[in-house]
Image (cartoon, rainbow, N blue to C red):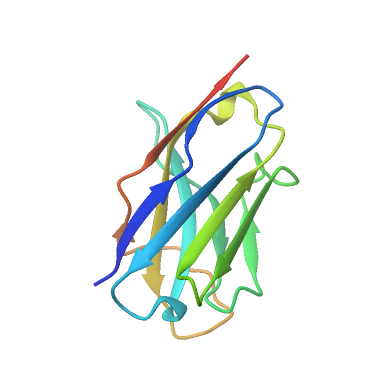
Amino acid sequence: QVQLVESGGGLVQAGGSLRLSCVASGGTFSWYGMGWFRQTPGKKRERVAGISWSGTRTIYADSVKGRFTIDRDNAKKTVDLQMNMLKPEDTAVYYCAAARVYDPFSIPNEYDYWGQGTQVTVSS
């Protein structure tokens, strides 16, 4: 069982930056592919970034490519999301998620464990 706790959300002006962090406990962190998702009321949860457990492969939603960067530190059991050039449409609750994988280079599409979420609000 993996527990995930996000932090780093807040209010920022358009064009600004935020760095979200997710700390994992329980399980062997380096066995899990990780992802960052976001959700706004009335909309489906969307994956914005994913990373393999090796950290060598990443994937991004088209809407955030070139602005967001996901990275992980397996020794510290953290996965971060650096968000630059933020836009009002990035406003959402952001969730960290984990899925057990057996290929160090795979990025999961289905996730088993979720954090409680952290609010990001971008003002225009």
